[in-house]
Image (cartoon, rainbow, N blue to C red; front, side, top):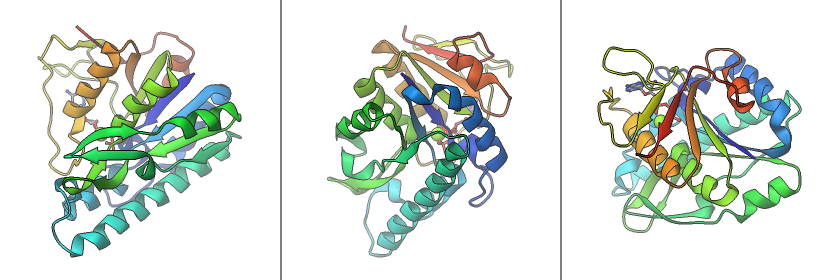
Length: 250
Ligand SMILES: Nc1ncnc2c1ncn2[C@@H]1O[C@H](COP(=O)(O)OP(=O)(O)OP(=O)(O)O)[C@@H](O)[C@H]1O
Ligand SMILES: [Mg+2]
């Protein structure tokens, strides 16, 4: 069983407004295709998610009437991106089916308090490839929250028990202070310099790493690889050594 996140940083042009990286996403779909019999895909929002959610401050909760239109718009934008991802997967004969996450999670104060993972297992059992994505969701304390694709990776790993989980991004992995790729980042080392992105509504690399530490602690092998370099995703899926960062517990 393979659990793969196609980061918003790689399937969209992050700095631009709603621009899909169709060629890159199709190439990545081609690399996923040999594994379609036991595959679950998550994707992030990139320029279809973060800037809009940030503009309406949906990560901070629902406090104003005008935010409702924003909530609906972010969701529509994520569905649009999801449709594009599905098309790329279908172009490589991957039987991908969308499972929107919002009805399956409960959030409280920005934290996930429950997740219904059963539908994912049933789709897998039927031979389909479930595809889900980060989105705006209801929050019982704040009104709204942003559920990230990274959050979904942890939730799905617990249900589907993949041996390896792969986070595909627009960087080779995590870079150290001198800009070189760190092959391993461990939870006891805190020397990773993190460039903050103020538009990011899901906590950027900092939150990604803390979720990955948790996954590693629970026994999952966690890799960050580049989706911009051809063949790395396929190599990582085949268990070959490719440039990447492995995130480890302790
Ligand atoms: N030390 C670091 N090493 C590598 N990347 C870093 C570092 N610090 C910050 N970053 C940034 O983290 C980004 C990856 O995280 P980001 O959340 O933008 O991607 P993603 O999770 O793929 O996108 P999305 O959240 O839309 O799914 C990189 O594009 C890079 O700019
Ligand atoms: Mg992110």
